[in-house]
Length: 56
Image 1: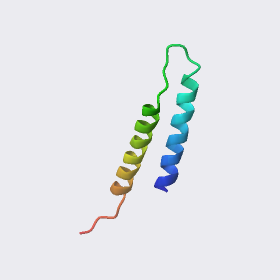
Image 2: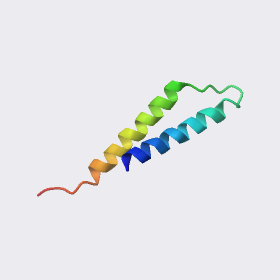
Image 3: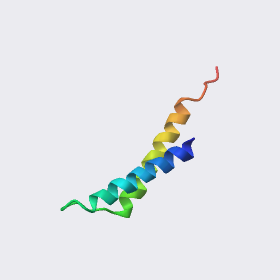
């Protein structure tokens, strides 16, 4: 499930960065794609950890 979430986040980021190429004054970088994808992965991992059953 996390893998699908990360792939979806990456695809959306690539789409947004591609659209920015057509907007004057905007710049699209690979670093944006990498950092946004990493953010999706970290956020998704945090959600999985928060939803784990707790012992005790």
